[in-house]
Image (tube, rainbow, N blue to C red; front, side, top):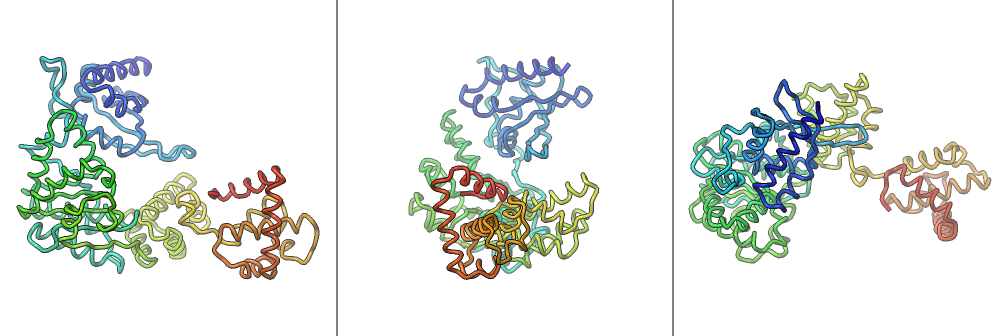
Length: 468
């Protein structure tokens, strides 16, 4: 039966293909993988490559897809999107698409109404594209974010009426920029429901602009954004190599600023480091308030974890919370990933969340560069590979196999830790720094002439999922 449904899906794609450009079809529809059709719920399940992919489809093609699905399946069908986030463990994310209120048929020129874009919001209720889950209530305050959070709340309460316009927030990935700017929009919309508030990523803005150029509707595109009361743009560093997008945004920015409309911008770097952006725009970025959002320190990470545990009803021991906070290295995104994984592992294996489970999850949920190796980590893997005990490595024995284990451990320790040779020697059997240097030189020399040994060393490194 699913084969028949697959044929209906293929027909749906055929209809869509007739109503958009070939390049657009190849970019946004060919990568979609049909999975199944639920007749009872009238729902088509498809797999998409990323969350951004799903968001873009819903933002720009929901009416076109709705029309094509209705024609093909002879019913008011809704799409459900699935993203495979972990192939090894078959972990997925799923989103249910919006059901279009009205589906138009083909126009006299053989096309459906133009592919929906953000411009369709003109003259009716505007989709703010804000995430209602990211609010000030769950944006935990700490030393690293106190100023941006305080100013952000003030901006939300008095949009366009303070000296904090534009409000420019910058900081490294994972520090909470997207959460904060969403919270500003959500709060402003709550206080001023009549205001036109919109959140847009720099990438989506650029895609919309490119579509407007292709459809010869650039003026409509600019007019739409100039009608916004609060414009929130995320990741504007992505425009540094896009001069035409920057020039267009300049006109939007200048118009909104002169009218006293609020502008909120987020970037991974301050304006001065946005190479490729013209001075006329940089000076406008800098004329309001620039606030740095730093990575949360350990205490703030602990507070964030405790808050999320209370919200999700999780019970995690204090020592595990401490361990996660130290290991996540100040990334809120990693904290969320670890908690989600802990909850999943706990349910699947029907086990308590303890330190052993946390260590197991951390290795999968946190990037290696955020989880520095220790000499103990390296010793454990090397000894496991050669099937010897650490006690024998620490001994004074000069047996050839133990000497090799010792030398390999010292070489990897010097390569992957920031410890001086003297400290490495002390931790590996109380040797001095000259022994460590000699061991490293020996290993490097052997690697050049012994391919089997080189492969063996790479195998040990791969056990840590390290990069050369």
